[in-house]
Image (cartoon, rainbow, N blue to C red; front, side):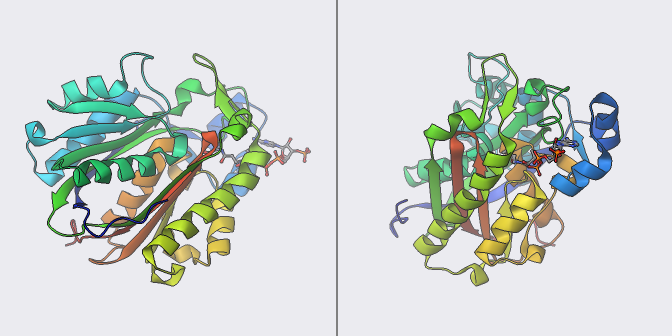
Length: 319
Ligand code: UT7
């Protein structure tokens, strides 16, 4: 992917918010619904529980409102809304239309679907809009995978869940937070993970696992190279929350110690577009980032897509 021109107008995250449905489904709950066990799910995935419920619009409005409030911006001053989702509420219109209306925005709004890489695709898109003159962009990553999950299929039902994360990104003088970005896709892998319209998710878990590690490492390496950085310069890796074994294998290959990694998977499950913002803002809220720290986000998903980005944390939200 291209190196960011030094002349590009930059942006920084000035507010964020997350949302998880109230209803929690534990591994024990699942073991009553299908032939599985808490022990197996914890060992093979790292997941202990997940949140399910709500619609993509309702969760987006919740996280989006929090992000707008934290940034302290007038909703009417937002220039664009990008909603990353694989699970729109309707085929038409884009779910972002309802979210735009409910949040009291007057700007253009559109959905993007790059599966679990979507938030990072959206981050690059948001910074691109800012480079082209937008002043404030609201980026939301939301998925309600429970609605397209077959709750009798132990191959997928143990993994997927619902959630949302949002960020307000505002233009700044100078280069801004983004140091590098990479987006990738390999459409020939479509049969490995897909859902027909109105249908359930189908997945070749083993092959997705195998490819996931490789494409996450490839994408992360590209962003590091483009930014002229090494993994040792990174303070926090925020990987897509799919399976702790995938995260461990990718981090090991990248040379990133696990204590530098943001993980919420054990309590959220795989929330697709929401997984990276949920993990990132959990780490920020826990005080794990200082001003100037470098953050590497890296995702993979159906498509098969991959995406990564390196940002310099601007210090917002520090006590
Ligand atoms: O956002 C991207 C989304 N997708 C992913 O990230 C998926 C990536 N893949 C994975 O995370 C893993 O492949 C799974 C968690 C889906 C499966 O783990 P695995 O280690 O690849 O298990 P497996 O399919 O090789 O199955 C191992 C054994 C099998 O039994 P035998 O043949 O060894 O007797 C399965 O029948 O475990 C059995 N098994 C289960 N047992 C209890 C498979 N699923 C389950 C289950 N509970 N849910």
